[in-house]
Amino acid sequence: MLLKPFAMAGGAVAIGLLSLGAQAQTEPSSSSASSDEPPRLAFNLDPVVVTPTLTSQTSEASMTSVTVIDEQQLREQQPTQFTDVLLGQPGVDVVGNGGFGKTTSVYMRGTGSSSTLLLVDGVRLRSATAGSPSWQFLPPSLIDRVEIVRGPRASLYGADALGGVVQVFTPNGERPGGWIELGGGSFGSQEVGAGFATEQNGTRLSVGVDRFRTAGSEIREHSEDRGYDNTSGVARLSHRFDNGGEIGVSGLRAQGNTEFEGSTPAQDTNTDYVMQVASVYADMPLTDAWVSRLQISEAKDQNENYTDGVNDSVFDTRTRIVHWRNTFAFGAHQFVAGAEFLRDQIDSSTAYLEDRRDNSAAFVQALLNFGPADVQTSVRYDDNEAFGGKTTGALALGYKLDAHHRLRASYASAFRAPTFNDLYYPGFGNEALDPESSRSGELGARGQYQNWFWDLALFQTDVDDLIDYATRDGRYAPYNVNEARIRGAELSAGVELDQWRLVAAVTALDPRDKETDNVLQRRATRSLRLDLDRTLGDVTLGGSAIFQNHRYNDAANDQRLPGYGMLNLRAGWRFAPGWSTRFTVRNLFDRQYTTSRNFSGWDYLNPGRAMFLSLRYDTR
Image 1: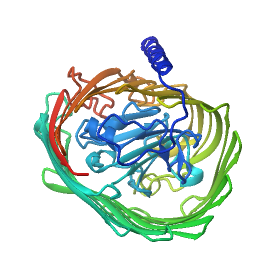
Image 2: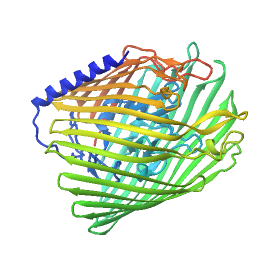
Image 3: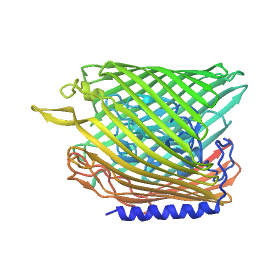
Image 4: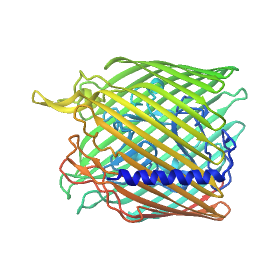
């Protein structure tokens, strides 16, 4: 069993952090950090976050299990895929059908792949037909920051935030200057990117482009390499007025091609894809205590699938949203009230029974402070023309024991909406489906100090009306058939001392189908991630170790996929003003591992050892 080694590793992490923490000062940490930190291991242990409550709060004050990955960490790790930075984070599991742009699912706290909401600069992004975001196409080199919020957030964001929310932020232009980067490495991988930002008289402009391509690797044993290319761009233009108001437009687009394994190794199967978000927004301070925000956005997820050069199918989904939010401040208390209108629309070579649905919603939130005690409560009502009305709510209580320690408890409900495939796919959909619904409880404690922190969370989620696929009356279709119970614990911690930085995450899960008592498919139940970095003058050295235990590929728990361990190394050198080079090695020991199996019985293989070298010039 892997439980004992995980327990020993977790204990070693805790002892190491406590011993390092004992050497550190125990003054309260700053609630924010300058955006102009010098090029060193400057690590904000209590960063300001906006995703948990739609307002700016420190991680500690948000009373939420949240992880922040900042720009420095992204540049140090130099991931070729966005999900590389998510893998092994507290409560997060990543399952892929091979590497380099292949279909990828993100499971948060044991919930399904469609139960984690992805936001890009506040814009919801996912496929309305499949239900899940195309995580594999996000360009990590054009992302400045990631906030990972664990636990349900449906009372603020509506459908699909059952397991949690991942929000990525693109550059906002607050650091004027330019950059260019070139890189290459294993599997014929090549990357080139460039960008610039400028600011004058309150107007900011930020633009970035990136091109990544690779010959790829085998995703099936004794088959051919399957390639991938991605051309991406981000842009943001904003203007801030003297009264604090702001207007702006922003967008992200990624497009390219990814190759898959066909029914035979010789078959040429590939997909042309487009992922895009665009929004226009206005922040309006109506009084000293009232700020109103209006955002109009569109997100697009498009796939054109080919087999041996013949176009098999097209799936183009668009989500248009009008979001209006008002924030009121009354002393130590804050209130948020808003409304949202969402329209999903599909254009496909498949003749769906319905190609559009609307959702209208209203929500309110109260953030109350009574000295050492905090109360956060929210409620939201969604009216969806496909399945009717749904009310969700959340309540969180926090108590600050002293300057460094806080206890928290929360309870929340959430739901996942059936996809267009679930409801309307011809010959398969079931229009009588109800949304999945859940109830979650969490108990947590956090220690926050100047040079280190720790956070412990215990949680349970019960899911009703779980959508599963079964044969009834001779018809294979989705039905509300199962119930699930997910219990778990997360421990995260970090310390920075004498140019050393250690971040650790341990997750233990028990995700069960309540009817069969089987483990939910494709979920690892034990996970450990360690990130260690060290600065030596102009040189930085670091590594990440990731361990996960076995998982089952099927609901019956007959197909057991073994666990794995992986070590990634990295080194950087700032050899001249503005100039730097970085070298990374992923999967140092060339481990062969899989997290999913094809319906035909063969395993999807992940890439082996991969090295990458880059050169960057940055004047920011």
